[in-house]
Image (cartoon, rainbow, N blue to C red):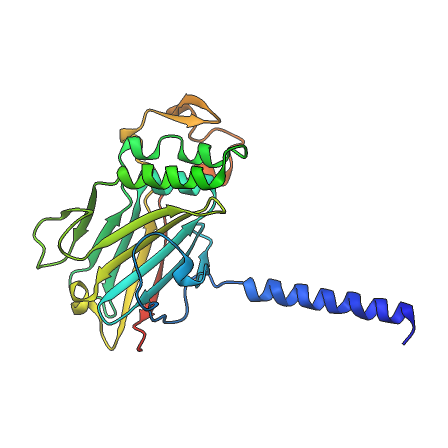
Length: 262
């Protein structure tokens, strides 16, 4: 094999490897597989227990996610990387609805990530600051956001009369948020399976995951590139990116999940 042939062969191998890597990273729009939760899982907003990977990347909501379970809990790990989607989640929250496989029973709905104003001020803008030390920045923002979350909203559970729960509740419903070294926002949620057991048929249930979007009723101004701007002048403005418009529009998707067995 002469030098030119060897060089051509090497280039072809590199192209094949690159193609294989792209293929390996291709994720479905909705999760297809069951996942048994990692042993000793902690709801702390870190993705290390999930090997920093997710089961799906949904185009409607622009988030990546993994749904998993063990014998006690249903888990949801979510990641947002785009600044406008991070804003959308921080301002509008995440809504999870578990529905019976045959629509039997009252669905269980959990609204999470409803952050008080002080908890989300300028978060996405600060994430764009390339001059800031990343470790210090993500730790400060993680603390800021978590301190801004006071309540979770849970409906459809007959054993829990109060639909407004403290994030430090006694029912085992948990959530945590943390920004990572790539300045992505990661959310982990846990819901005890006993609260959705009436909706599980043959180890299967349906679910809907929604980003409700920013509620215009409670927001008059928002920070746009460091400038406080009247929101009403922004909606529908020509030239705005689709992601910006999406911040004010509910987006969602639905799927089926089969409980994983150990």
